[in-house]
Each structure stands twice: as structure tokens, then as C-alpha cells.
Length: 456
Ligand code: BES
Ligand code: ZN
Image 1 (cartoon, rainbow, N blue to C red):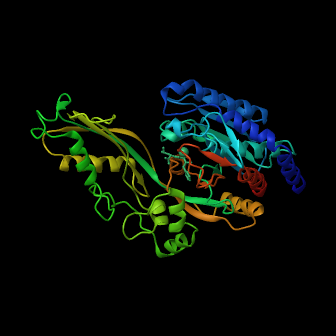
Image 2: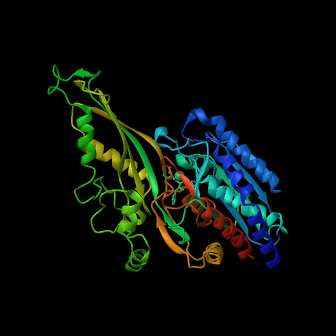
Image 3: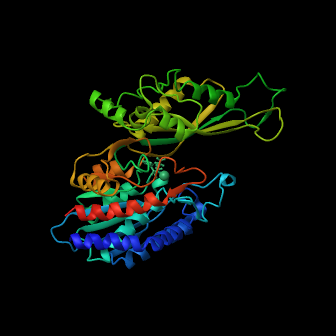
């Protein structure tokens, strides 16, 4: 076995270019899950994966249709007595706009220095291809020592709306000892990381409607409510000056951090300077009484993601808008749920909206927060693998981002996830000029090879 491991690592070394070309191939496909015009590209990405999985000798390969985008499944289950790992991935990406801010087009991958720039290069096609490359290296050098199943979805970036039903109706198919999820990144080039907590998400569109049509702001201004002003006042009231969210009952289910965990978080290299550097903001700001690492890892938020109302073109137009809209989302922490937060938002709107306007809320999507086990066989095999490559102990971090499937798997399949990844905090995921650092990516492939061997 040791010998196979060495051969697999050698194979990975010799096939760097092949692996990179495969990554380049799949990031060329603009699989933007939120864009209904990209349905064909979504299917193309799913088919790309099935072809690759077939090349790897995987079996029972299937593209399962869902109400939105298909789930790709495959398995290889011939390592009798060895553990079964469910490998999770997502082949969808976030929209690439604003396009004009990209130095090279988002779906025409471009290598500059150590980086491969493209939408999805880091989040998370890079991580999916790293996993496939590790498996190829093992398969080509003596075969897999463990059993694997793949579940690669196309809806992660829109809150995985079909995955709960899919998992509920395929419990046996998906049964495994634990899940490998490489969608959670690492803290720095020399800081391999394992994530044990993720925030959830609740995303809404709030509409405030006033007059039946846009009005002359002189003829009618002052005599009717302006929906834009009303919406801004409502939003302003959602947080107090100390950053505490004012929706009724919002903190009731929030689990507090104990002193030991606060001390552990304080030791992570995620101090003020880290956040100042990563954000480029002139100063940090957050809920009073907590540190930045706690703000993003263990406290909920409420943020405006976008607003639309009235005249925003060049120059001036004396108009009183008929409607105003804001996209608002909350990052949630255990044990908040998107459903309960929606009720709280409705209560807030009912209690605070003045007469003279109407309002409605559209639910975009949501996902539950999660806290994962820190000491299962998967976590131990991963911590060891990361150390084998980076030579240092892994950091155990909480993440502010969301991967809804992690909590859903605990609830539905009863399995824990090992969360890691080879994306870096400055990869600009979801932003223009997303990139993957390639030296880190190759080390990630090697670490994954070790990980699979470490399980036996
Ligand atoms: N990979 C990210 C989440 C992430 C990034 C976790 C870095 C840990 C470290 C994932 O693809 C993502 O962006 N998720 C969305 C989910 C949402 C739309 C439900 C997010 O967090 O915005
Ligand atoms: Zn993402």
C-alpha cells in the first residue's frame, strides 16, 4: 500500500499539466445556476463530470434530474470492509457580473503567474477537479483502498433547493461513513485548515409600493409617502447603532460561544489586520462585544445585498418612485432557521411599516447553519494528510460562508462532513477576477491522495 501511495504521488507530479487542462476545460463552461438562460450549460457541466467519472472507472453513473439542475451520482464500492466516503461537490458557479471589472473574461481561463483566473476556478470547480485528480492518481496506481460515492450538485450557489428532496428519496444510495466536502477553503498558503462550523442563509427581496405610478416630485412630493424613503427607514431600523439586529426574537436561538472556544478562535491568524487586508475597507465594524473572527464565524448578520428604486441614471430627474426594492439577506448561526427568520422579518415589517404604502416579501433561498464533528475518522485522516504535505498542524476554523448541504446531511443521512479546501481567502470568490492559486492546488491534490490512503 505504501508503495502505491508513493506511485500515486509520483503520478500526480507527472500529470500536473493534464490535471490543469481538465480544470481549464470545466471552468470554460458558464454553469451559472441562478441564470435560467444557462440551463444547457448546466447540463454540459454535469455531462463533463459523468464522462470524467466514467474514465476513472466509476460505476452506476447517473444524472438525476431535479426541478432545477441535475445531481451527478457515481460510485465505486469494491473495497470490502473499508470505509465509504461520500464525496460532495457542486458544479454550479455564481454570476460573473460586473463583467467590465474582469481583467480577462470570466469563462476564458487565463493563467497569470501562479494563478488561474476564471469564475469557479476556486469555488468550487478547482476543488472538484483536485479531488478527481487525486482519485485518478490512486486508480491508476493499484486502485482505491476505500469505497467512494459522488454526489455533485448544480444548485449550491442558489441554496441547494432540490437537494433535500434528493437526499430524502435516495438515503440508501447515499449511505456512507462520512462526507468529504472540499468547498470550505484554507486560511493561507501555509495554513491548511479544517472547517467545523458554517453559517446558514436566509435571502429575501422586500418590495415597498406606493403610488400607482411614478409621480412628479414637485406636484405631489410631500403629499404621499415615498416608497424609497420608507424602505430605507425600515432597513435602518433593522440594526441598532451597536450592530444588534432588531427583528423580534432574532437572537433567541443563537447559541453562544463558550470561553474555551472564544480562546481557540482568538488564537487563529484571523486578527484585525487579516480582515483589513482581505476586505480593503478603511476600518472594521461589527456587533459590539465580539471580535471580527467571532463576527463572521459565530454571529448572525443582516445585510442589504442590493437596492433598486427611482432614477439612477446620469443627471437629475425630479421623480417620486412608485416602488422600491431591496435584496436583504441574513447569515444565520446554530440554531436559527431560515423559516423562523422569515417570520421575524414579517413581524418587523408589520409592526414598523407606516400607512400609505404596501409591502411584500419574496423568499429567494435559504440554508441551515451547521456545526460539524471535530474528531471523526475523516477529520483525523484529513488532519494527518494536510500535515503530511504542509508539515504543520491544521487550523480548525469557523466559516462565515454557507454550504447548506452540510447540515442537511446530518439531519437526513445522519453523516458528518470533513470540510476543507485549497481555495484561499484572497481568491475573490463570487467577485470579479476569481482565481485559484495553482501551487496550493497541486499540494491539495497530494494531500487528498494521502487522505484517501490514511483512511485504511
Ligand atoms: N464555497 C462557498 C462557501 C464557503 C467559502 C465556505 C469559503 C467556506 C469558506 C460556497 O460555494 C458558497 O459560496 N455558498 C453560498 C451559499 C448560499 C448561496 C446558500 C454562500 O455562502 O453565499
Ligand atoms: Zn460559492
